[in-house]
Length: 109
Image (cartoon, rainbow, N blue to C red; front, side, top):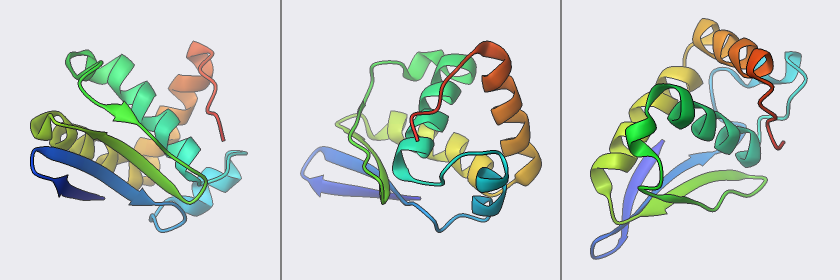
């Protein structure tokens, strides 16, 4: 996870797909550890655990990279904290995927 100031007052939160400690688990769960999967993780986390972050940034992910951006650095920092917890903890990710499936959430990977 990298939080960058791309221009004064504008920030991007980036994650290079395929570089996390849980990529193997993502694949074992039937998903691709690409930027779109991680965007799904972010959207699910925001909707279930951090609704106060809703609409405080936008997404612009692609196959090789997750990207959230906007001018609310604090919101992006909060999202980075949530996502880092998932991207570094197999049990946390496993629980998130199970909760998403139970809720009928579709990862767009």
